[in-house]
Image (cartoon, rainbow over all chains, first blue to last red; front, side, top):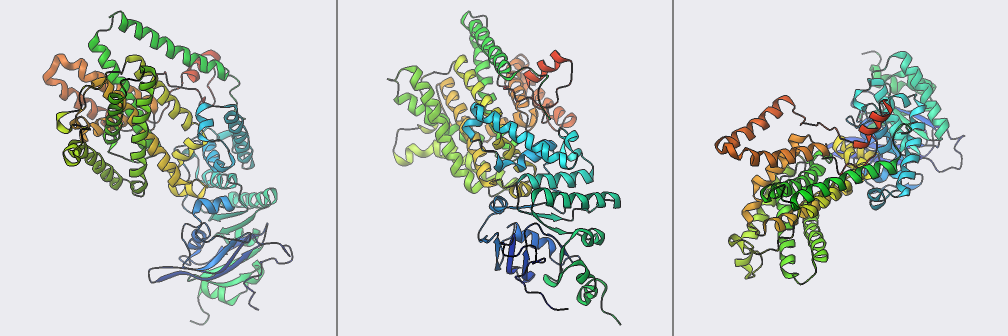
Length: 273
Length: 344
């Protein structure tokens, strides 16, 4: 199989002449002497849905942490819609357009579902401290608009009915969905989903697949997801990158990946041993 | 959609809260004026007010922000001393200018100290933050004790006590401050700024990934907490008329923390109630002088055993919500954003 040019988006025909949503050039990070991710070249076009797969410990979540600036890369560059993200903090990266969910759910458990989404909308609400304390009309207006927006977002996953419930009291699947809603509330251009289908049954997973497509179409955003459920990955991802020992070993469409000898070796081991 | 269609309209809620607060002020004030409440009990009531401000301000840092600072008495001391020094110097100014100015100076100086301590301290968390703030509180006390003899000033008078501070703290002044502090904290907590502070308590990494500048909000909550502690200190200076560094020792910080924990971390009404009870109780138990501290500690142990989350948990009382419920006989759908400064 021909190796792909690292600066090419996975589906070049759709995103021709457009700035990619995210472009990583030779991204790498060392923890002490251990190289967790190295030479990570990856480009994601707008409105693309891509998957990042690989065996356990391959460095997938580390890549997410690099993209969201939880870790600062040791090497390489990362461009977000053409903007260099050097020295950005996690909060700045979020405001620049990256939102994420977490492998081990990190909701604001003691707060209501609505408050979780409102916190996601934090930077969309423009009320300064004085306006909030004096309860000026602008406070009420912004607060009302934000609540309506939050309820609209919750309605994507039919969650308006549980808006007043504590986030921690929701069932597992609903908590995963709420994390996605909260991430969407930050108005991202790139959404990173870390194992969105973990712990879901097959019918929930197929519903999730529908919803991921729906979100992409509604918000016109790019989505990169880490997932071990191959039905989901092969079903919705337009492009896939396979990571092993911190390096990309294959990139391509689901069909290309399925038949890639390197990938089969990484997952199942070498033939004839 | 979440709407409060069944509830009372917002301006009316405000008026009800404000009216109740004014009635409370007028009634108690006239009772004090007519000596129905003795001078001794007036003193206790004022002390309750000061302790409410201290507990509510510490609750901002402990209950809402989720940090554990143990130097609250230090901020109180800074506020008390700076305002006392100002009040002594500004005795020529008319009272209605000097008093608010003194409170602001006390609060601002404490806020500045909160900022200076907060920047390095908030990089730490849990036990480490507790230790560094505890150290800060002790440093303040020792500095106040020794600064005069080291620098040759006549500023704090060290162990000899700062005397003859104008006794400007009145019942009315104290409780107007209580009202303002509760109001400011309550309205802030119901805005995006308050939600940001809560999100840091809940999960700092998730808060950061939601685009919240966590360092900024941590510092802001910490500085506000210190500011209000400084205001309480200023009131305390005008209440006692004499300041000694030993008033602001480690035990004072613990006392305030106990109020917050007992009331329920993250519940303003809890802080208000437990500040009231824990201030009044030792006074009311004076008749049983010998058993006073025993009863006090038994109460604490009982609450920690039977209600470890504190008396009120994280529940926040709203008078308007209660009235709305009673009026419509229907469960209110969400916490109504009513003021609750007067819900003691």
